[in-house]
Image 1 (cartoon, helix red, strand yellow):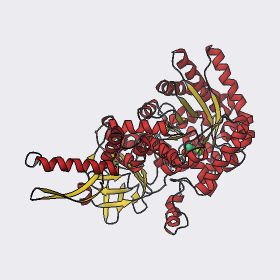
Image 2: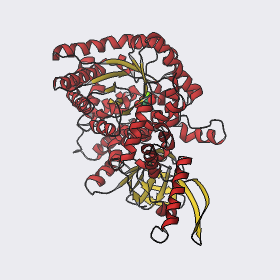
Image 3: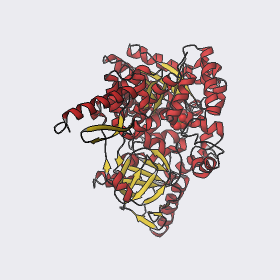
Image 4: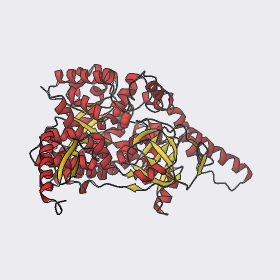
Length: 599
Ligand code: PEP
Ligand code: MG
């Protein structure tokens, strides 16, 4: 146009500049040129892709057209989320056949061949270099190695805070859970969705952003944050505006490094129990559980000490200068042992086969029988409300004592190497201050002993999770002992509503939302009226006792924009979420501050 009608071109450029400056936004204009005369027909704010939304917002600040606050408000958290996760090519998606759908538990697109157990996934991934999708009714802690090797996960049961969902989000593995129309036959190893029957090795595509799974392979487009300078600029402005800091939930040094690269200012939850499932460690953990007395448990814990110390050493090193909250052991012990059914089957097989074949080796039998007795003794009808969290620490203090020693030894070693560790030790599932009064002084004693042994002081704190309604109600008392609070909103939601976090989404929550009984899934978006008010009360009461009480959130809601806004409103200091959700949380924290200025 410039070459063929320069004057009209210059006029057009002047007008569009004027329009963009007037509307302070990118314009979608319609125009025509007739007999050399320019006619402007229409203008409106232009639609844009997520990538362009970020670029336009940043460029408009740089041109002086809008403020940083306006730029931060012009990009939605959904757009950032979409930008950072692999997506299916929209054209290819149109032709794909939907197999099933469920809860969009961990965003991103993945393709792979389906396998039904963790060991096969690991083998296919490591030895045959296959792209795998792990398909199971639900996952358990001993499936984690398979989940880490899989490109994606599909389960037919569970909801947004089920084991599969939490682990997948933390590791950034696309995941759909609770796909209840999918029938998974673990014996035949088939996945049936309507009239399609898939077997091991068949390809599927899983979209954790939308909660859908498709037949076959769909082309994937993968973004890279390093190639997005404008996004980094926008998020730096977001950090300047936000009152809340964004921290990350990370269990391993690799996740901590990733969290830092995404802009996390601390680790808000390191779940130490995941570390106990590694191959060399699990037998020691099982020996500890099976010990008859404290001396036996201590001996097993002594063997675990150096593993834990090296885990923590790496995390402190990657997070030098930043706070790291390490949570002491939380889950019920039976999670570390095989199931009673599995053990019974093994025992029976050994016994029956020995009747037919005198050469069958029965040396394993006594150990299996001891383990079965322990599993039966540990059986609880409702383990999520049973012997776990701080209750376990009081019942079997050996493990948490070892953990505190490992944390403090690693922190002191880091300090002696010239680094700047800030351990914050978190006691889970407190319900009454008396639990803390009983256990915390014993643990503080260990912290002091280690520092004296190492001849160095580190800056450390002891705090607790607020995840039982009674703890929230009595937070004033709890803050007499706890130096910080972190809301465990997965459990707090479960226990406030009385809905099982593992089953509710599969059984009745969707129906409740459909029928308008609930407006949304409270495991994904914080319930402000109930759970949220308990949190507000806990902060107010806690700070009456301890005015400088630092408060965070580390349940799955910590990465959800609406829940982040609530945390800002009630006066949290930070939110903590999986590393992959950190950029979204940074934007959400800034938007919350703009919409709800703190007085
Ligand atoms: C919680 O309950 O919110 C929490 C973070 O702990 P977990 O999910 O490990 O029970
Ligand atoms: Mg919890």
